[in-house]
Image (tube, rainbow, N blue to C red; front, top):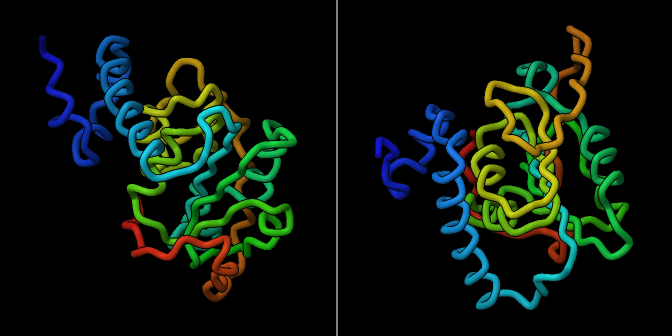
Length: 205
């Protein structure tokens, strides 16, 4: 077979450029199985969360992505809030991953009781994105990799340079912000300790 070994192919430096492998059901099923078994094992040993609890995970790409510097990649808070509300249940756990440097503040998410985690390790973000029921992506390769591996029954995708997989929910394209958008706000303060995960800053994708 010309399909490369999972451990060699599924790395950020190669998989982003090899979308053809994601169109092969057998290969995709294999790597998903490996990733999901690993994450399930981690959950059993490190968390009290039940596998039956409904979980929504959101990745919001911020940092250097804002209406001023990268308007073509920026999705406003309202976009994520709308899609969370669409899939949220009364008992849903909602976890937001983003970066402290943000054009918009995160007060709207905190006011709704969502679990906001800023500048977390890549491993933390991807484990949650793979082990969830609903994953709401940003326009980012950092979102795309765990989305392809996720057990989520709903993956919300906004069109960008990576094509969606079959079965993903393709959101309507957001209008571009005005050309003279204001410069970003200063870094948003971290939320209270009980809603933040303190870790080293991940590398932007």
